[in-house]
Length: 153
Ligand SMILES: [Zn+2]
Image (cartoon, rainbow, N blue to C red; front, side, top):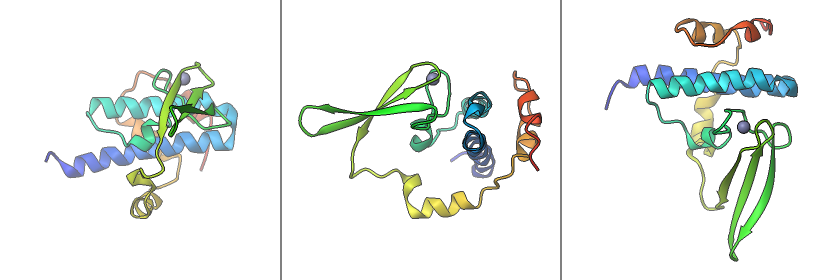
């Protein structure tokens, strides 16, 4: 059972870092390093607190360099067919070349893709300033110079 409130707080931080990574890449595709900093921190938190990350999050992160995998921006995708009916999507990370293979299953829907999950996501704050707050609470062995230079309000 654990501590639901504490976990919820941690999950909100993970969710926030994940959104921040998407946010900076969508603003400028050259922000891949900054995005990786966020996703790497996200992974550090998840590991430290032994939290299970949502599969929809996992499949968009490179397992080798933690880059955010956005098709056409930071990753390439191609379709692969095995046997007759089984189809896969191969996502290749443009930063390190690592690729992951995802099974295409039209009947399988991730929980986070369902309407009830969207409602919760919309309530998440979209303000980059909170990163300072999230990161300031613990000493991560990474520099904070990058997000300071962002200067969002
Ligand atoms: Zn990679």
